[in-house]
Every structure is written in C-alpha cells, then in structure tokens.
Image (cartoon, rainbow, N blue to C red; front, side):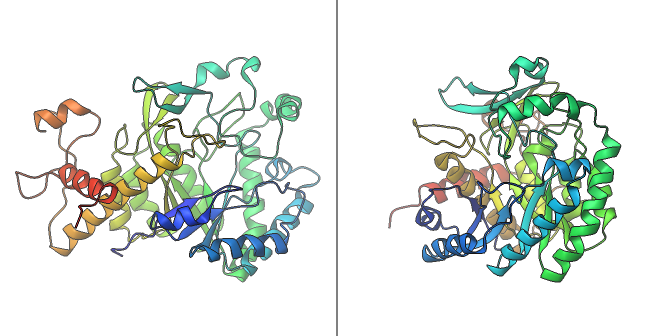
Length: 395
C-alpha cells in the first residue's frame, strides 16, 4: 500500500517517453476522435498500446468511453448505442485495459466558462455561473471533450432543458443494468466520473454531485465492476462535500482518482489552483485514500499554463501537472513514512491561530496539520519532499 501508482493522461500526438521520464508508467488515454455511434477499432487500440509499451509504460485506464446523449436520455436509439458501447468495451479489454472511465453529463462534458490570468501571470481555467445565464455565452467551452459541436449543442439546448433529474437517474439505472454484467464477464471495472461542475449548467440538470448520489449509483448494481472515479476538483467545487469523509465511505469502490485543487470565488464560481494551494486539503484527502487502502491509479488533474507553455488542450499543461505529480508523491511518502514509524496522524487540521505565523501568512486555506512532535508539521514534510522530487540534491 505504500507505493502510490501515479498515472498520466495523454492526448493525440503526446510523446509517451515524456511520461516515462516523469517516473510514471501508467497511461490514461482514449480514442478521442471516435464518435459514440462507432465501435472503437481494435487495430487502433492495438497500435496505441504498442506505442505506449514501446516507451516503457502501460495502457492502464481508458478515459473516457463516452456515453451518447441518446443513451442518457433513454431515446429510441439508446439500446443500439449501448450495444456499440459494450462492443467497444470488449475491444478495450482485448488490449489489456481493465479500468474504463465514463460520465453521465448530458450535453456539455466537463466545462469551464473562461480562462483566468492570475496576478503572477499564469493562466488557469475558471467557472462562473453568471457567465452561463445567457445563451450568447455558449461556445466551444474550455474543457469540452464530447463529440458534439457548438451548433449541434445549440439545437439541442431547449430539449435538454426540459429533462428532469428523474429521467437521468432512470437512464443511468438501465444503462448499468446492461453494461455491468458485460464488464463483469470481461473482468473490467467501470469508474463513473462525477459531474463537473457539480450543479446544473446552462439549465441542464446534473445528478452525480454528492455523497448521496454516489451511494445511489453504487446501489444500482452492487458489483466490484460498478465503481467510481473520484475527482477532488469536481466534487470539491461544492463546499458542502466533505471529501475525506467521502473517500473513507466509498474507498473500496473508488477505482481511479483525479486529484487537483480549486479556489472558490463565490457561489458556484471557482478557478483551478495549483495542487499545493487552494480550498481543498489535499493532505487530508490523500490521508483518507491511504487509510482506505487505495494505491492507484491516481493522476494529477489539470494545471496552470506557465512559462508560455503551448498546449492545445485546456487544463493539461505538462509543466504544472508534473509539479502536481511531485506534490502528490511527497504527500504519499510522508503518509507511508508516518505509518511505518507508528506515528498517529491527527483527525483535524490546525486552525489558523494555531499555525506558525510565517506559514499562516502564505495562505489561510492551507492549514497546518500537527504531528505528535510539536516542532514539526506535515506541511513542512510535504514541502520538503515535494522540493526533493522537483530538485533532488546533487551527489
């Protein structure tokens, strides 16, 4: 359990040698250009696996196998499209992949409303519900990953706004009843990603938003093949979600983890912050993963654009995701080291008043967590290990 299996998401044209050079072997990717009404071609999956293996990595997770809106709505073509989805699942398994992520977001996939330039000059993705109040704001949104173009979405918008949450739940129950037995037979585990952001977007309902929803999903099919992709940034955008408690509650059914941080700027508004800064206590969240016996795959999710890095995929900067990977490694090694020495980790973070003034001044929403030794803090250890991974000492 001490070894965390970090993973890295790639896109078309990425060099898998760069993934290996990060010390990461697990690759998360997909055939992004195949539409929902087509079976993923086995020959293309085999070619993709060969490129990954040639770089010394392994193709571990498909993210994502898209679910057509017609399936989500339970429309006339839902049954035929679900059969196509299952046939794609069979081909995915033939190349050795046993974890497949999907989501139940009708219309737009995960989305942000704008790029935000921060005071230090870095750029990050942001969401503000106020920007979604007018249809004029609908455009090729940052983060849009479905095979659905802008014009098509506009045409369907009125239809989608008439959909109720019950219809989405009914569609999901029917979908899982069909696909989970197939996944069981293939020894594949399905990981449902929560809605991002976890509230209605453009008047379109969202249902995978909190602990009660995750409970309901798992109750539809009580099977190891029916699991969760736990995304800290998606669920953490809502301050009412207690992420460490959710990890401990669903730990055995969490099959894949996305870890990132956010800073909430208002009701239903936030921007994506560096992993080591933000409103989410990643140290506490990873401690919950560790306590639950989770060891991966886990990937650093999203990053700022810094140093004028050119990247066509919003949120997927290599530089800041690599920094995030080092930070997650540092946290995990600290947790493992703490456990190996029999130290007791505390159940709550230090308050701002209890923290050291210098650290407290950096960011109040990064509270300290005391160890048994009063002169040290887990934050010191995490920073030390993170810096070691980024800049190891010269021999």
